[in-house]
Image 1 (tube, rainbow, N blue to C red):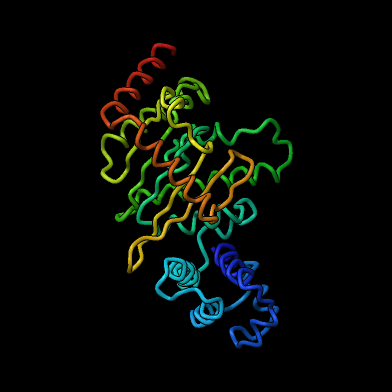
Image 2 (image 1 turned 90 degrees about the horizontal axis):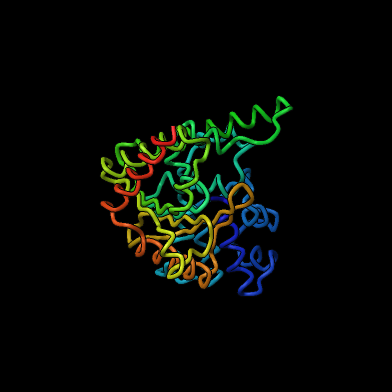
Length: 292
């Protein structure tokens, strides 16, 4: 979250062609070093809400604009949050993913499309273990990190167990549900879990994106998540894009954000209905029963 806040502030400063010395001369921050630490998302820099307000005023960001509200929301989340639960696993939690964990915990609505794996929030233990399998685990350090990754995912899944969970919509590509990932028994258990969630959870919505829709509305990427955060005046949206096991970024450039948002909307429009999703899942479960 600190990185996202810093990147937004730096973008506005650069748009006006201001240097760190200009910002200090204007009285917005006490030193160029502090400004640099804020912009780089340093965890040890202290700032106040008033500091961010002064920077936005200097950068001529209108107080009533969506951008002003978005930046202030990020600052407030940082100021209100104690050390997060995943801090003890920081060695295996990448910066962009740390931001996702932070933001998910404050979300009112989450929409995600997955084309490679069942979304992490919905994975069974056996399926998760299959995802985390790697060719070689010869070093004890690697085994420790693997168990840490499992623990982070298990704790992350508690988000949907809260008494006030966010509205969660998972758009899952048909192709990945046809792969017997981890073997027929593992996949059958995973499909049964998805069926149960789809049928019984009021705030969890699971929809299958059929292969036939690829010719009409191909997804822009293999994994993208749109998070909506509650604000006094409407909602602020943030979009997270991931390449499986490679990298992840937050999309903030307005044209790219619009493209990804439109792609996610198209996927949702062409996904199967709840009834058809349940029928698809049951058929896949039956197929895997026959294979065992």
